[in-house]
Length: 437
Image (tube, rainbow, N blue to C red):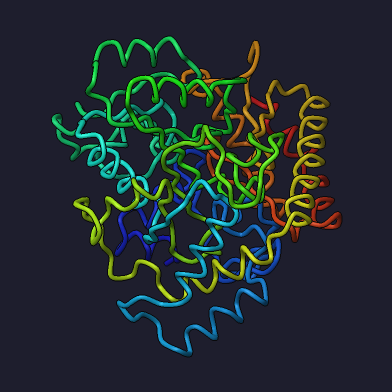
């Protein structure tokens, strides 16, 4: 009996998160035994170059010695206390140093918890019930945010989720991404009822679909005009695409005094992935007066036994300390080089495609597109069968890609020229496989 068959007997679908099941690409998932630097090793001992990076956290590469040492030292002191620790204070200070607009920070265990809490906080602050999200943006699997979600929901071809009540779904307004007119119409149809607009400031869960020029600034203007909050979900992009995340990239041309917030920041941020260094940790941050609405100071309740876990905070502190500008420069350079190589290989094989990037994150969309893919409906026109052929050819060559065309590729500072060359060497055969119908 295979390990996957064993898993299916005791775990629904054999996996603990749906996209891991290879449902959209076919075949049995690969079970990983260990990872190091840019490499994964499966339970049969086979080595793969990794372009998934644990879906984002492995910015430095897997099992970085200093991060592992920090976690081991923390574990020796105790796994969980259910009490405040110095480490969570230090990590909150590190987050605020990078993103001064996150004046106060509350830690949770997952990105889903962070976005769920941000929505609750927005409703508590405004006294309003409705929330706007964009089709194709994924903000975790809490009930109100699963409508027209990307990521695994898109991969499985689901419109949402069973078990979400009609009343809950009715409190979420879904509009097309990159469409100012649709958002204007939503506010006009629901005056003084919308608590917040939540967005990925550079979406990477319907594939990478960057915002049009000025779109995020428009979101800030319209939410302020209507008294709603703006939430930037940087669970994926935060501290991944740059030292200050996507918000920092967009503001990089603005002179700033260290620790002084910029005027037009979103009201709340959510962070995950990199901020926990690969351990289960996420965060909500924002203006002090908003954050102080959380219990025990204010009336908005949020709690978690494992929130701010000492192992996770140790990993996060060490990861952020090591992730200096040189790390982001190396990852950006590796990503740019690989995007060019992928495009060249697919062009040579006559495979229609688009490569779209937001910082170092990128997605290869297979299909004949007239122009940029700038919303979920366009992303859904991709040729999933061509992607599946490409995916398996790369996997056969020892390169592990995200098993879905709706996900981003993640590289790390450990992806040096030798590692990139292994990926590049696998591209011609994979491109030929993608070209066959």
